[in-house]
Image (cartoon, rainbow, N blue to C red; front, side, top):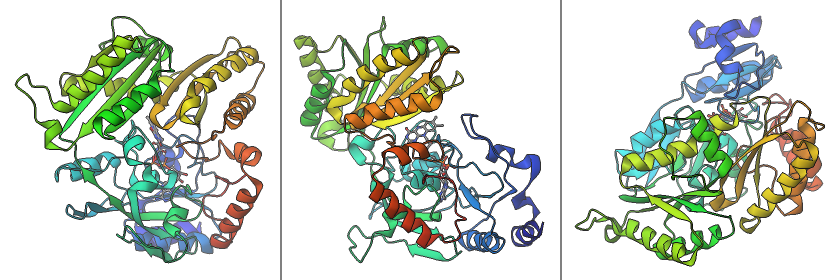
Length: 468
Ligand code: FAD
């Protein structure tokens, strides 16, 4: 094909993959979505991305950007399209410790950025289980969330500037380092979260934070969810807003984790109904210098707050990590969530957000409705409780009267009724287009379609994603 010849001329044979070489790009992490792209192009810099897009546009071949391929909504499905991998755009162009910014290319793996800025005693706070594969371009394109949104915000909040190749091949340079810039429409925020439907992000200016010098991390057990917000609020008050993460795992999560990871040390000597991983972190010397027993003031604050709630009877048990190994054990359990959710097939995966006071109400309503639809269904819940984001996975039984769409629709109806969103942090991809059609405000949808038509009149940029 002409287009392949032109791409090979531009990038060289080893950067234009076809046939079985495309397999690792054409199947997603969950194994649920696979497709047949015409080829995978691996440009090495922004100019090459631009040239690849121009070639595809001239041949009217759709293009699908791909970064780490860990997205959970089928956003990189690419039948008949050219996949454009940003994996070779993997330079950290600059780290500026004083301004606390970094200039990074889209193919930088999130964990590599963590390591690089860590050398300057800084953090890029976005973190979640897939950080060893997910890339900055994919994180920006999906506006990823993760475990630290409570303190630092989602990827959108962590970004100052962007470089984007538009569907025409033109390079849009809004690589500003400014914290304030009201010069017209905010194009950066338009491309963040657009899941590759408006352009290909090639680089970004991101914000960095001082690395906490001490963490206090604990597993907390409760008999019910209702006192959890009180705990969060007390911890925020006691630590001056230093709660980094507040993650909920119910009893069935803990049971399944013990079953699938029998070598892991259990959190408690028995399974409790509600389990919360809480982490506070501080950079201030007053909080971080250990006393003669080796305890830091930030851990002491955590201990005092938990102790008060144990005395009141709101908390059943609590275990504070005594060292980094114990802290990592707590995080490994939480970050195994995706493996737990997808170990059984078929699965129906949801990613919703509700107002903070409504998490328990949502779970009660969903369980009741699921029991009517498919009493033999299995389910797994895990939640970034501090920001109201719930991942509720259903494993329908063979006798299920409801198909996947119906289960999704019912969960989405409950979410909407209590003022939530059917998509919290994973985006829309192909899996939630029906939800967009059903639930998104019609004027908002029409505006999005008008923007898409204006920026991508040929409709070649990641077609069939996001918009119904
Ligand atoms: P990809 O999967 O490659 O792409 C995702 C989407 O972005 C696709 O639509 C793609 O076309 C588009 N895209 C990719 N690169 C670009 C680019 N350069 N320009 C424009 N568009 C582009 N997500 C969370 O938010 N929070 C979590 O806690 C979380 N935990 C996870 C845990 C596990 C174990 C796994 C497997 C996934 C998890 N995810 C989570 C989902 C996923 O990791 C994120 O959505 C991540 O941001 C995707 O990055 P990626 O590089 O893998 O992108």
